[in-house]
Length: 167
Image (tube, rainbow, N blue to C red):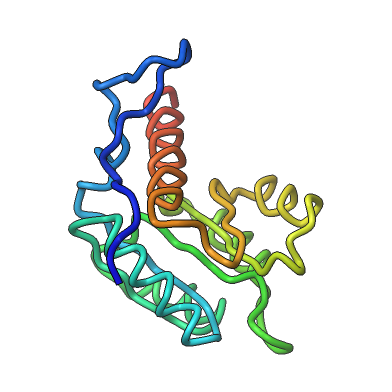
């Protein structure tokens, strides 16, 4: 298949006009590393393909549990810019929310911590809880178009860069 849309369109300024200084995809042109966790291999593969299409020079590693996320974060010398976890890893082990809590309790969590969930379990309360414990992006399955995914990632990365500059 071909990519739908472009990840390099302009972001509208607050007055609705295009803001060429801040184009969608500028942050996504950095060399970013993603750690993706989902126990359903097909879901993980779909998101991995989408990430590699919207983020032009990125590394995407895939694991299948919250425990593996934490082990990978401990053992990866290069570190990860972003971690995206499924909310449900089955009946055993850490949930997606538990995993995010552990990630956010670290001295230097990744720039972007996200969760994605099926629309069946995607209640506003669940989304709010994920955001309150530190997630800065929440994706619903089925996943958005590539253009929408690029925009959501870009927005979240720009917000985290803003917060770090102010800190």
